[in-house]
Image (cartoon, rainbow, N blue to C red):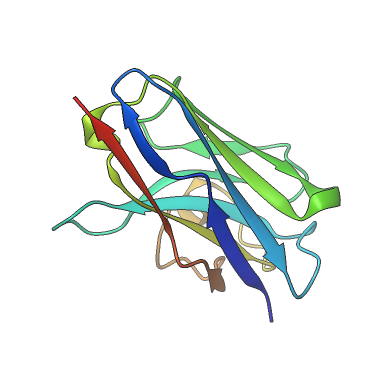
Length: 131
């Protein structure tokens, strides 16, 4: 079993930056696909960014391209989400997801919340961007 714990959320002004971390424990996740999703109040959870196990491929939602960067440090079992130029519409609870079934490849599987790729989810960290 894998436990995922997100951290780094908080309150920031528009235009500011935050770096989220997702630390995995219970099993090494160096061979796992990892992703970030978010859920704003009254909305469904949506895809933000994802990264393949080796970091060779990354995926981003159109709304965050050019502002957010996903990266991973396999030696620390940790994935990061660097968020720059934050906007009030980025306000949400951000969730980390992970899974070992990396034979599911491509945008379709990496960007869907209901993807069979993601077996494990964290509890989320709140990000609030004030205008």
